[in-house]
Image (cartoon, rainbow, N blue to C red; front, side, top):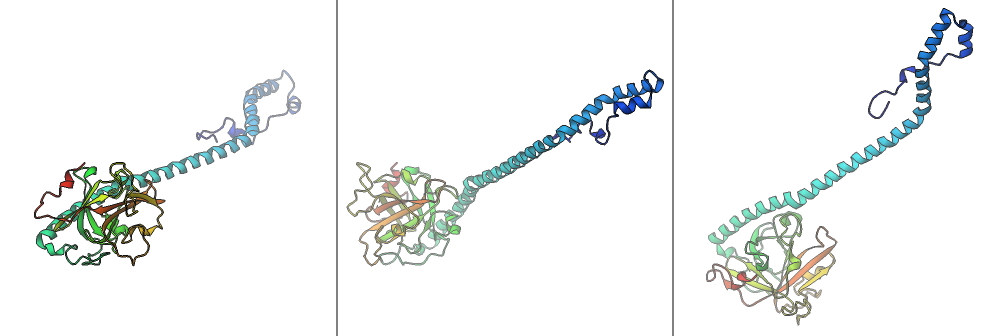
Length: 315
């Protein structure tokens, strides 16, 4: 059988054998009626006989080639199927999860603004200033603040939810539950996806020293600025020794401690920091890209600045 499904020529003759000439000459004398008939039959049968011999001789090698072709065809189909699965997964991660997260962000925005309007006392930043956080507990997955980064455009506004588990980060940037709250002494630390699931921190590497990061709560606007030297663009010149940007391994959890990079948590922080964490490089979770910022002055009341602080006009 050929690979195209047609039968080899002479396959029907597999069990036939050509008549030996010696037997034919004995069966009928030359020139006789039967002899002529047999000579004619032999002439008619010679082509199929050759086909039979040719088919029998080539059937083994051709079968081996067919096995190779079948194996290659099967491997090719498997690779194509695997490639389609990978492609569908990439499409899901890059586009479908973005749709879900963006829809959830819209819902969170409506809920948050309604809560702020109904009861501003829900603002977790209201209360005594305690280093390292510890103010009113926000339920996991609930939104409690909004983050704006002016250099990413005026439409960059993300609701911050409590928690950094996968379910929380699927909704948007998440707050490390043991870190400070906005405006507090200590380290207000956030995590967010870089690619997919809304990609809130996709362009985190674009932030430069001095760039503003604005946190909005029910009552207050807080403006943080990326640490480092705005004039030179050097991230490592802050007197505190805290870099404005760094790339670390996932195990370097000290970046979200009350004083970023200081593992001794007994040391009391004297400034209000903001730390943003995301995966690095893009499409990989091998490392973490970290941005550190420090509070730039006191918070501004939302009642007095309904359109936001001056930093929102920077780009």
